[in-house]
Image (cartoon, rainbow, N blue to C red; front, side, top):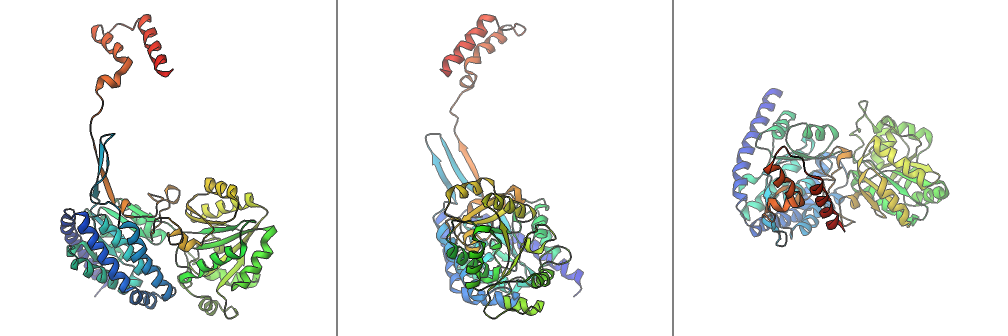
Length: 491
């Protein structure tokens, strides 16, 4: 088979899947809330039952991360997401306001194109299928080619459970011949109503350029500021737990640490006690050559890899038992690898005089990469938290928790999600942790409560005067009466 043949087969496959999805969605649109919830519950149970198998498949196929941590992510997607959304009204009348004579009706967007990354493949599929079906939509999955088999298997698990619970077969499907051309067809096809994109910058940009409404997520590059009042041992524990979870493949995980001069030595000692290794200047120069590729993108050779694997790749002599590599840094910029997103157990360490300087530095880091995504602060000073909350260009500022699990809503009370909106500053259409409510429209039914005469109010005299003599200017007496009437209403 030639490359051209594969492209054509992929495009035709997408068209066939969309045709089936369209028919299935028309059926789903007639289902009650109870029917939809029964389907979602069945999928949640099935995904949880297969969480270990799917985690191992993802690790074996992609080479990214730690399968035991992927089990946690699969459990999170199957159970935590479902437990949060199961009580949501997503079908029919979802709210009523008798006093204002308005009620709201949920309207599915139709067909969702779910673009899946290789870093969190199985958990992202579980999550996206659950929230799409919960909102009454069909979903067609576009898998990352490097995670094709584990994504196809996850869709199979979900689809079989859904069909057994009464879901139309075409409502959940996956491209089995993924190509750039096929995914382009999926995003641009007239039958696709919304793109839910999680992945690299180029893919998200393509989603927004497709002409189809899209919810996309840009890169994370979250700095973590350890302010002088913080519980330093706990702060370091949170950062180490987060950065080593699945070898740093969650985009909300910390990418740099900012400390104040007054507490730097204590922070460094705590990191060393927790299994971090501070690179010498010479070692840092060697490693930074492997972080980014020549085109400025992240090097996939380090993504989701352990410290030991990174050491073998770079030739660095790293002691056994080391969990995270840290390089001291002062610079920020597109060509400064340590200031960029690193989906691996690698951190930059910046030092500032005080929290105001840390505030400016974190803004600089985020404006170069990661604007709109996530930042973390460890502190007991509520004033500092408020100042950071008012000024940082992020959609989620996490306080005294790890970035990876805090950002997705596992260790915080944010909406449990594996797609994290970055807002307008990050080039995204929303700043939400994406849930079912982002995947349906609202039809508002509103009764009339005022007449034209009510809206004209005191200006009704002007209308009457104009009707009787269109060319006549209002008299001074009439103007005085109107002013007096307005002032009387204001007093």
